[in-house]
Amino acid sequence: MASFQKCVSVLSKSLVTRAQFCSKFATGVQTPAFARCFSITPAANYENIIVEKKGESIGLIKLNRPKALNALCDALMYEVSDALNAFEADKDVGCIVLTGSEKAFAAGADIKEMEGKTFQQVFGGNFLSHWDHVARTKKPVIAVVNGYALGGGCELAMMCDIIYAGSKAKFGQPEILLGTIPGAGGTQRLTHAIGKSKAMEMVLTGDPIAADEAKEMGLVSKVFPPDVVLDEAFKLAEKIGKNSKLTVAMAKEAVNGAYELSLMEGLRLEKKIFHSTFATDDRKEGMTAFVEKRKAVFTDN
Image 1 (cartoon, rainbow, N blue to C red):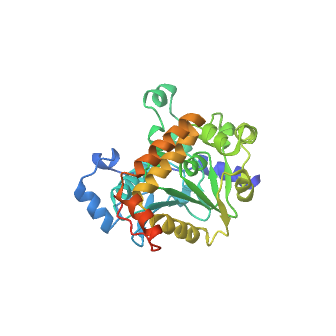
Image 2: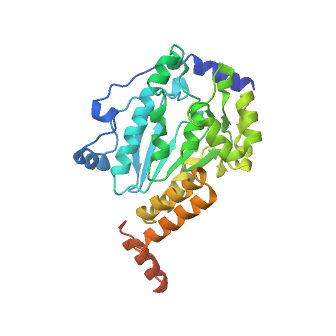
Image 3: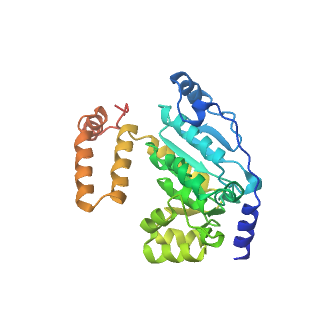
């Protein structure tokens, strides 16, 4: 608990660093030429993240504010959105990996940035609304969590499609200790993931849970030693990337529907998307390859 309180203390003292964006980067509007350039050299002039491609099919976004334990300032989240847009536009990328450092995935939102805001400012400006970009990404996003994933950090991980955790990872929603509540999905996604009783306990006490407990509850898919968890995520991302990117996006939409719709509505969505796959070249190729006992060659069409 002492280390948790220390983390909250460090986070509350973090400095705000605001990147300077051109307007088209900040709004996520990009030209085809920019997308092509990014697919070749995906490292841009980011101040708060590191972006690169691993091989041809994996996009990597690494949060990079080490002195602030990767506190999620507004500028960082705009940079993440921009990087996601670029990887979405890169036809070779089949899966995206989002991670932080071994010490902290992200210790929360930037308290220094939020401390002076008023109700009028946050309500009128729809504060934090752009964070949902991660959840809206069509390509699969794998969160690799080492160290602290608290507050906004936990919420950011839950926006991703799959969470792999290092054995020393800690997940929590400590906003109650700061006199507020989670504002980027913590009360909603956490409840869907682990159930009302445990989510309520975490939100009302601010107490974190360890990686093994998070896995047992279903919040985390797998737990690995901290020094190998990223490589394991790359293996998963590469495996996903070998499938039809078109079909993967359709499957992701169907699974996400289970969280937002009633069972009957979800089943109707699933059937609609299933039927839609029969209009694709990749469905035909996949079934033909199976019948002919060969490996399918998908073209993402």
